[in-house]
Length: 183
Image 1: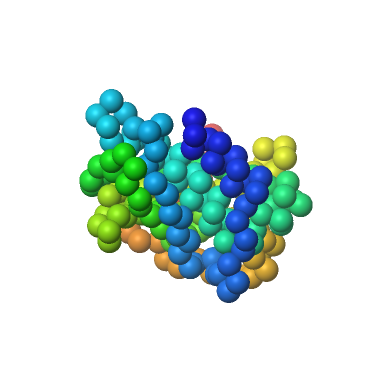
Image 2: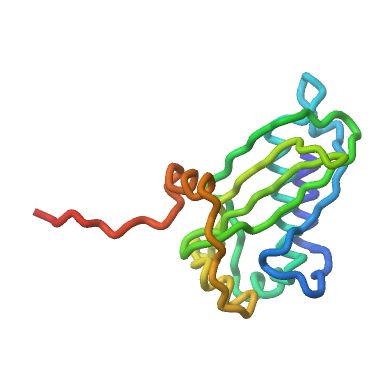
């Protein structure tokens, strides 16, 4: 529950944009494990990781200075798919960092990597497919977001092979035009 309040706070009162931050620069969010993040084994619950990632993505949007544009246009970021790999357990009151970076995009989605580290050790890695919706729930092309919100007409870097394969398997990658004819 505490992370939901933190998520709401970072959306209503985002941190200041980082001058010079580009779409491909990493965004770092520092946190500490709270008691409400824990499960019965006294380590961070898998669902808490996802909420922490939500907060870190809000911080990334803030770092990029995108909140004013998104609000003005009525855009809201949403997750279409995510996957996690857990390496180590985060324990009560430990400090850690989440490094969020956009690794690419296509006409449908932004693909992000979110890495949890503590003392330069990897604790967890998440891959997220995210997009923006307008007030009516219509999808906003990631290409339009890059152009309109960032004021740039950038081409996406090539997605790493594992992320591209995951996107296809999760059915979030661009779909090939149908080659079957109607009979």
